[in-house]
Image 1 (cartoon, one colour):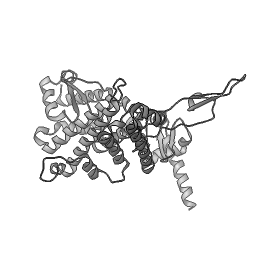
Image 2 (cartoon, one colour; image 1 turned 90 degrees about the vertical axis):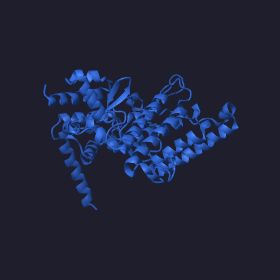
Image 3 (cartoon, helix red, strand yellow; image 1 turned 60 degrees about the vertical axis):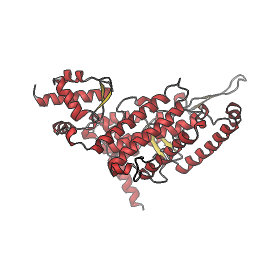
Length: 410
């Protein structure tokens, strides 16, 4: 078997494992590719490990980031000289920090999604802050160099607060989100009680999405790459805790701290007015014959029976998981390369087909005027683009005509 054929099989195997999310051993890779085990071990040590192949312990690995490379990029990478020779100390440290950040993120998600863990809210707060600190320091290391991770003339690395100042503007909602959770971790452990979970979950959900988005922006790939993406949704619904009940359960001091936190949380939500600070949990009321389309179901009472109100809570973030940039990225991952969409063509489709008037495809967050799109919408667009000729072109023509017409009126 020719060397290039083996390399092609290696690329196909890594892509297959990444898409399926399955772990594998080096022996399995050797069998799939035709390489000897010793050759695969050498490739893993010098070219793959920590970059495209991540060790999960006890000789098991996952593939991560291969899907973001073209065939040519992968072949070029495999043809380069050993990373052990060319990689700098700073790059090695940056990779280790990044890997540990992803580990902390996974532990945070796994802890939060374990219903039997009584301190899962506290554990999540500690671990997500750890993930942010490690990743932001890896980012700072790449931009500013090793010496800028430490205070002058000391061996003490920068505090998270100082790293945040270097990484975000003062009014950045992502920074506000991290600082709010950091405050919970450092100063207000008595606030991490089950009764606050509905509010904290919205704060936590935004932090996870912010981390994923920043990771993808910096590294060009998803930090989980198919591993456990189903546990990304953390938001739970619930009413504000009863302060009087909290006084009986936990004492006056904790109850007063909860009241103060809720007030501060509400002010920060209004100040930031952003999904990057906290995820809203909204309800909608529509008059429809289909129960599945509403959040509240009203039925009339007959024969003197009282009217029934059945509440069906819906997680907006779960039903409409894609903002515009995320929707475009997701569509382009599923579409053939020659049919990928630009922001302009995406907006043309939304305009032409009145997507913002279709509740099953679109949701508007009224507080921020943000637009969210459903998985159903993504599937619908992929089907139309893939199977209907000139569908995108017709949408663009209609949108262009609309913009030109409105421009001429000015």
